[in-house]
Figure 1 (cartoon, rainbow, N blue to C red):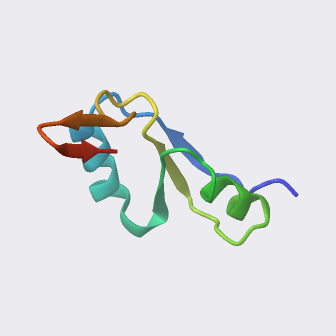
Figure 2: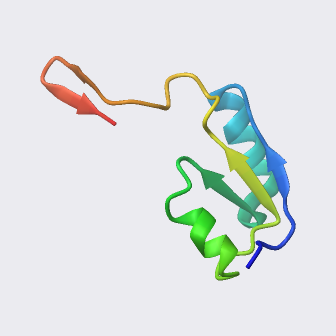
Length: 72
């Protein structure tokens, strides 16, 4: 099954993502990898009006260790 239609947003910064999420509110879902959201959308268990893709936001991907702390 195909997901319901939605508006796609690809912010280029954390500030832009926060602004979009604040403006769109509960009608928006964040897409960070798609392993849970995409299958739910295909089954129509989730039908967001807006999807905010975080893939292009610098600093929000990967795993790093710094001073004994691990950031994901």
